[in-house]
Length: 339
Image 1: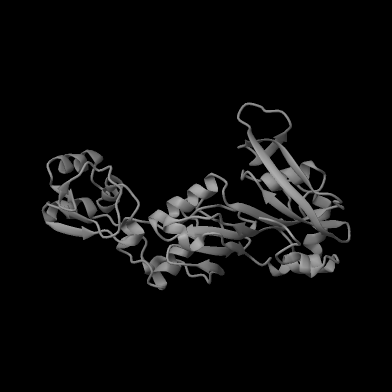
Image 2: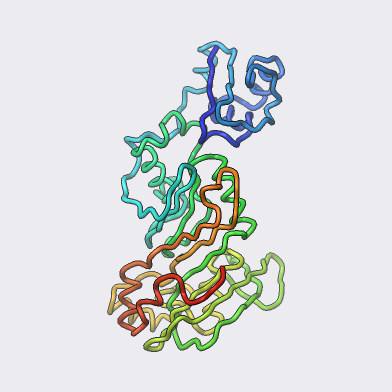
């Protein structure tokens, strides 16, 4: 018999999901059979597998060591020695969540098996700081709750416990988290606007196509923006992302004739080449700068009502200053604005 006590970062998931991670080689039918026979119990009682685990719950496996070893002999959990090392720019952290200022060039999540993303760097950080153990990684993997394009910088939120990961991800999905970006666009934008349309992703070109009319496979998008300051034929915008779709801000601004500086996919190549030669700029000047968290309870109670901000990258700041954009416009708050 083996007894397992559920830890805080494992709580919030269903018992059957937990068991499928703990004994990753066992078929699901095996778990349900053992649960029916009471060979696997939860807090000393018969369980169906649909129960939501809480910290301190006890799972007992009335199985032979050979059986347990047979189904757990392959350990796919990351090991500290195999994890990448990176100094993360942590903006805010509590027992359940962490907010990171992602640099340009880093993936939020893996796109291919051999990729190294922010998730791997986060896992390494949690292992090194002893907030999670290699054993715990068998049944829970910390992860990010929102994603940014590889070449977009700024705030990425992550859950360090299952409950926080689920609740914070739900907030982003339900759009109760307000998201603000800073971007430098070509031309002089005099007035702000609230714009909408329909976006469809072309998988062949990895480009988003915008239209005013709804078409098959398109999703509705909403973007709100306002100019903060104008410089040498460029404008610094504050953009509120109301919906959050792939390349939404980049495609929306380009459709208005004000593409983001450095954006080769949607922007003006001649303008971008000039910035590449002068500054070595090879990515769009788009930065996730502020998140406003709503009032919340439960696993996210420490976050309730908080505003998380992230400073822009040094190159972004230098280009703005050279264009005579006021430095104060790159900082928060921006005037009397209710969030």
